[in-house]
Amino acid sequence: MVARHKWLLLGVAVLSFCLGFGLTVWVWKGTPTVPEPVKVQEQLGIEQGTDTSHKDLSLDESPDEPQLRLLSEADLVQTVISESGQVLTTSTSTLPEELVGRTLGEVRSIHPEWRVVGFSPERLTVRIPETHMEALYGHLSFLGIYEGKVSVFKGKPEVYQRLVRVTGIPISGLPDFEVRNLERGIPYDGDEELSLLLESLKEREE
Image: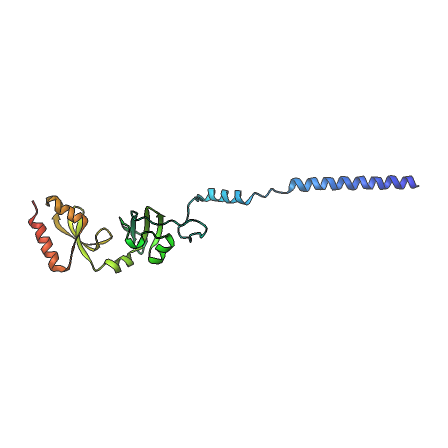
């Protein structure tokens, strides 16, 4: 009788072991592998076509990183943007004295109206709303060139310009030095001075 109970207990133990082992194997094979977070992010970046190496200049500078400063020989590239987001003009000039040696954060403090899209010791690239440029330079006027003819502009040469009207004077008939002056922009003050300038240019036509 005792021997029968021993065999019965042994059978139950073996059966339990087999069931437990089989259940463990089934669960282990059926559990999906969770990808590493870094690989998931990389895959999302590839699928969405994002460039993870690009540094967004809208973010603040990290205090742990060495801050770049603008050199005295750096260029300032200004792009004027309309309210609809259209590029109106792009100009390149020497860096103003007030920005020499400045960091990105300092430039933003001095010119909060600028949107900095490029910053390096040799070049500062910004986008400026047309409304701001109009407020600064809209009261100024100059003569320039548009489609091969002498034209009247509002604004400041090589910084901001808005076409007012095109005259009937072609630059092809003007002396070279006058063409160069028009390319740089000839400022004037008032309608009387404008009339004198246009009359002088007409007299110099070949």
